[in-house]
Length: 401
Ligand SMILES: Cc1ncc(COP(=O)(O)O)c(C=O)c1O
Image 1 (spheres, helix red, strand yellow):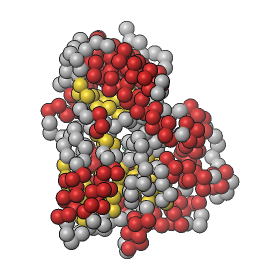
Image 2 (cartoon, helix red, strand yellow):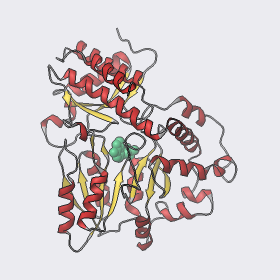
Image 3 (cartoon, helix red, strand yellow):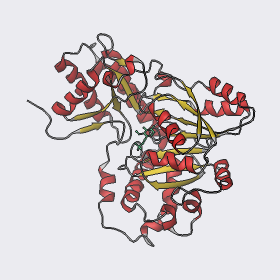
Image 4 (cartoon, helix red, strand yellow):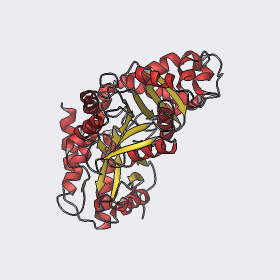
């Protein structure tokens, strides 16, 4: 007998649960795209988007997914033959670098493995070794969604400053914006890349570039950028139409407007705290399971863990088994393991991921954790006792803080 009837729950690290308010905001007839509400509301929309990244920098929106955000950032700052330093802490850092290579950029990489964050000292050393300053940018992710490693972006900025290196600092916040503390201006980030389908709770389809002054200067120094990717008309264009190099993504913008209202009603700081509280409950549960049997957290050190997604090591073959069991029997969809490197424990079939980002509530999270516990019991996978009790205690402590 399957119990997968009734309300289902998505616990993937993106796309995430879309709040009813966002869905309802999108459920309306097509608007005028030359004047009226959409056009008049755009100044406030961009301003509120920038508040989430804690920046006064320029912002552009592409119709596209996270890959589009990557390409926008690369296309406006680099040309074929330029060199970048790419930092790997999982699959997504590698993915962005591979896109740079496809655009003719030469990539020098530093690989920090599958379970460790970027070591700023190694970055500083690599930059110091580049005495001719041929590296034009450092590209990295804040949270690598495959490993659930979170990098310390302020420490990276310090590494560039200590080395006295002029490379741009470009950060992928696709999995972390609206979930984890991020201060683009205070941390001296030149370009932030993000997308709408994770912390921003909107259906996939919008990518964002936040563009600091030095990055705009770099764009101005390039001879040619394709019309579609070019930041300049998207920032300076006289007509709303130019912000999108064509027809605007009307309904996505209505959805984003509502999602930003929700974030700012909660306040971005409290949103970060809610994510931290939910992550704490997940870690407490996995700690209990890990007391007996194969399950454990992929990232040992709490300080290196994302508070938006958790990668769980589950034992060979168990990742897909647990995930499928939850879909089939209790209507919970977890994230599957992604190939993140060569080490045995990080093989995709050894992993599953719990997304606790965006419209995540303690009740939904407890449902996901209880569902995993039920899967472990049903599948006969050894696990320690007390996971839900641990999670409840962790949440109770967060509420009373
Ligand atoms: C950190 C990170 N960067 C980039 C991407 C790629 O985004 P998309 O799949 O929307 O193109 C993802 C997707 O999960 C991601 O998590």
